[in-house]
Amino acid sequence: MADLGLDISVIGRTLETLLGGRNVSTFQIGTEQYDVTVALPPDERTSPETLSRIFVRSANGDMVQLSNVVKARVSVAPRDLRRFNQLRAITIEANLAPGYTMGEAIADVAAAAAEVLPEGTATDLTGQAREFRDASSNLAFVFVLALAFIYLVLAAQFESFRDPLMIMVTVPLSMTGALTALWLTGGTLNVYSQIGLVTLIGLITKHGILIVEFTNSLQGQGRERRSAIIEAAALRLRPILMTTAAMILGAVPLALATGAGAESRQQIGWVIVGGMGLGTILTLYVVPCIYAVMGYRPKSTVMPEAATATA
Image (cartoon, rainbow, N blue to C red; front, side, top):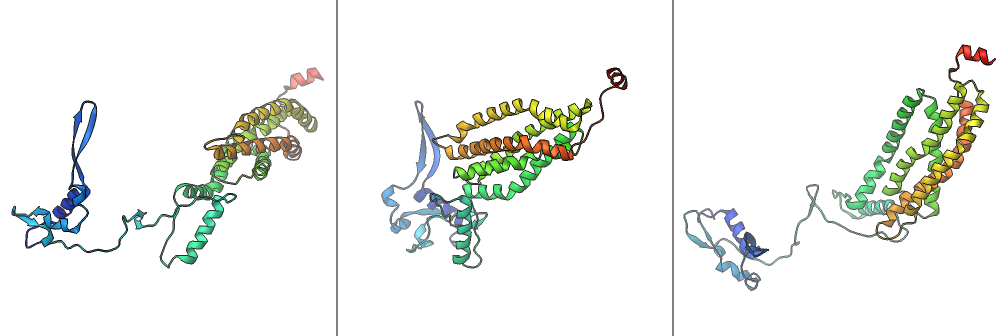
C-alpha cells in the first residue's frame, strides 16, 4: 500500500460505502424526504470476486484495483463485538421464573459465574438487576439518612433531643406491619417496596407528633404527666384514626392495581397499607407508654399571678 501511495483509511471508507452503504444526501418530494444512499447493488455485495472490480485512488491520482492489496478468506467471526465498561462483553438475558426473586437470581448467577467462567473473567449487571443491586446496597444508607433528617427536623420543632426519640419509636412498629403485609401477599423486598418503606417513615411519625406535642402542651399548663398522657391519647385518637384511614384508603388502589406495571404499584401499596394499619394500632399503645418513661415536664407556661388567683 505504501509503494502504491494508498491510504488505509481510503480503502476502509471505500469498502464501507460500497458494501455497507452510506447516506450522502437527502431530497424532498412534496412533504416526503428521502435519503440518498451510495452502495453497490445487493447482488454484487455477496461475492468476494467483487473486490476485483473495486478501484481506489492513490495519492498521485492513479486508480488501483483493490484486489492488488486486499485478499479475501473465509473464516468464522462474530457479527459484532459488544463492549461494556470498555471491555469485550457477552450479554446474557433471562426472565425470572414464577416464585423466584431478583435477589435470588443475582446470587445464583454470581455463584454459577464463579464456578464456570475462566479465571480473569469479570461479570456485571445491567437493567433492572443493576438497579436492584444499587438500590439494595444503598438501602441502609438511605434509611439512616431519612431517620437522621426526620430526627433533626423534630428536634428543631420540639426544641428537644428527647421528644424526637419517643416519636421515632413508631418507625420500627410500622416496618413490622409493612414487612408482614409483604409476606402475606407474596411480595418481596425490591426497589419499589423499599421506596414504600422510606415513604412510610415520614407518614407514621405524625402519630407520635400528635400525641407527644399535645401531651407537652397539657404538661405546660400544669397537668400531671399521667393524666396528660391519658387525655392526649384520648383527644388525639380521632385525628390519628381519620388520617390513617385516609392514607390507607388512598393506598388501597395501588395495592389492588392490575394491568401493566401493576407489580410495582402493588408493592408500594401493600407497604403503606400494612405499615400504617399495624403501625397505628401499636403506636396508640406504645408511644404513651414510652412517654410515661422518657417524658418530662416542661416549664410551666402559667403565670404566677394567674396561679395565685386560681388557687
